Amino acid sequence: MSEAALACDEYFTWDNYRKWPDNERWEIIGGEAFSMAPAPSTRHQKIAARLTRFLEEHFEKHPCDVYIAPTDVKLSEDDVVQPDLLVVCEEDKVKETHIEGAPALIIEILSPSTAFYDRSRKLSLYAENGVAEVWLVTPYPHAVEIFVLDGKSYRLAVVYGRDDKLESRLFPELTIDLDKIFDFPIADSERIMLIKEGRPSYGKNAKD
Image (tube, rainbow, N blue to C red):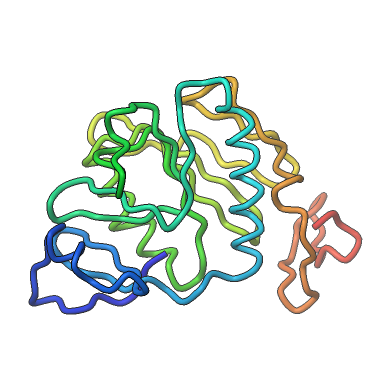
């Protein structure tokens, strides 16, 4: 969830990053610093909280840990990110102050201001560093895109909607009923047109 770059002509590293004020949130990609967006929306936070609960319950009996933002993930000396959620299955990657190296699973909850950044720079960075699976979650229209690592780039494995049961490719036993994740009201002003049986509908009577 990051926005404008701090300064394109300056180069920053992990050591620089560790000296910045604790009350400010930044990410570094390729030595370029990006300021984090303001506090996430309540809808974003609700989705994050619900996904965290499902993940925590699933991994309770597995050798993996779930972390939520803000958690620093150091992928290299000049790549430091704070994904919305992440799952780490290698104990030696968990340091006192941060995660060292690629998590097994990363989840990013998109917003209009950050979607391009997450889909372009961050997704490429995750692939380069070997993150096995990435979920991109769109709050509305409801969607979860699952990307799996295929060589040095990602392949879009599947796109799930609100009425679907999500199944992780990396963790086959991990399933989530997405109607329990996307269960929040949609204002009439933001409803999108739905196509049902060849007829357009604005979803007044449809399940949101």
